[in-house]
Length: 491
Picture 1 (cartoon, rainbow, N blue to C red):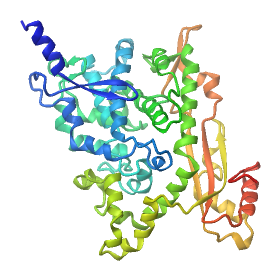
Picture 2 (cartoon, helix red, strand yellow; picture 1 turned 30 degrees about the horizontal axis):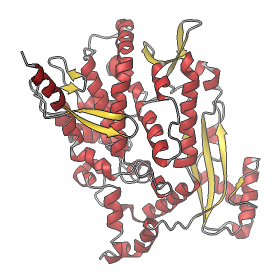
Picture 3 (cartoon, rainbow, N blue to C red; picture 1 turned 180 degrees about the horizontal axis):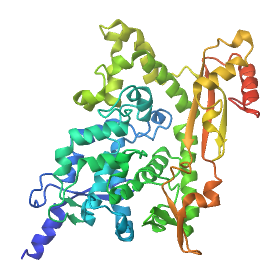
Picture 4 (spheres, rainbow, N blue to C red; picture 1 turned 45 degrees about the vertical axis):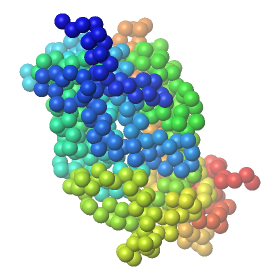
């Protein structure tokens, strides 16, 4: 039997503590501890891998750090926070999770895999939290839209940072993941291991496919922690981005939201008492989109960046589909891209030399697009968002230019639409509500506060190189929206 000194020594050798500005101390299983049978990797090995360390070089806020000077935090800090939040919610919700599975036991088929132990599922959630952003490229979601969307995965899906992350998890990190045998709470049950395919499943957006429905019920339930109205991903980024930017030190009450949440046989469920706290979270998230992610100058920077990517995306990443060039993608980050384009004035390639000044202006934050007019358009459940003239920048541009005087229709303008989904639509909402007065669990859409709330909003803006023709542009915009468009300056 080990001595008390040995037990104390083992306890402190078996973990690495990381201090985080949002969650306090984060405990990480360390390779200094005694290895379990067939244990070939520890969580710290995964964190220290090149794919996770790469996220230190990708900003959490794709271009907002150029507007908010303190918001210099990285994807690496965020994924550590999501992993910690995974442990935290699991300690609170795991009992209800296993109870919900017991209540639903009759639905299982004989082919369902056994439900893993509590420690094994905790680590599955932590690993998914650590790796949910591993596929991101420079400038985050912007890079999804302007580059990754050109390509397909091996199975023919559209390439996003999530689907690319799945490829990285299953082909480059599979040995590390399958070698794990413990969570911060303790070792897995004998014979248990993590399946990289399960991790990839958790981090990708749900699709109404047969393949998704054939996954074990327990795995589909866990996906609610990554895709839904409030998740371990968006709860962390709302707290972290608000804090780092200086927007709000405590934008919502995390403790109360977690306290009133649990699993039922239907899925992730909130007690009716927790609804005001959930509403506060949704408002805080929407406020961050309005004030930080979709700030007028942030979007002007994105417009500038889109023009640059249109000219030279193939020069920035000349290796084709990242799925087929993961070694090169590993080295492709915000840091590498900005360092590369900063030297284009000395490049042999004439295309690079021609674009060097534009990139230098971008790096020095000389943005040439100026806001002329903007309006926020709100959509409710019954509104035809996809059939409006603001369904795409192209439709918006065509409609507005048609209303301009002939001599102004060729003005150099950019039409930007920034969309925020305040909540998922009724059919894709994966969260449920417990009503104590009737002792039943219903779709969260049964609550009037949720169902009658705004479904989404689109901030529609017009940018110009100068403010020439502003009065005519504002007038045309007003005629499209049937209301008063916000002017860019005091008049």
